Image (cartoon, rainbow, N blue to C red; front, side):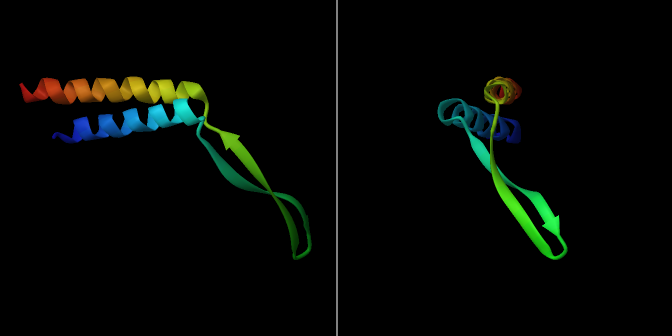
Length: 71
């Protein structure tokens, strides 16, 4: 399989994951710093659903391009 097809499949899987599970990630943020003492907070941020849709569309296009090159 061509690299464009593989990249397309990866994007399709990522997009489906985001749309089905509402993907999220956690970041750490410094809330307060006094001298050597730091107070941090964990923030949970979600990946927007439009990113999943965009990833799916791009994946389908790449898989189509990979299949078209083959013929």
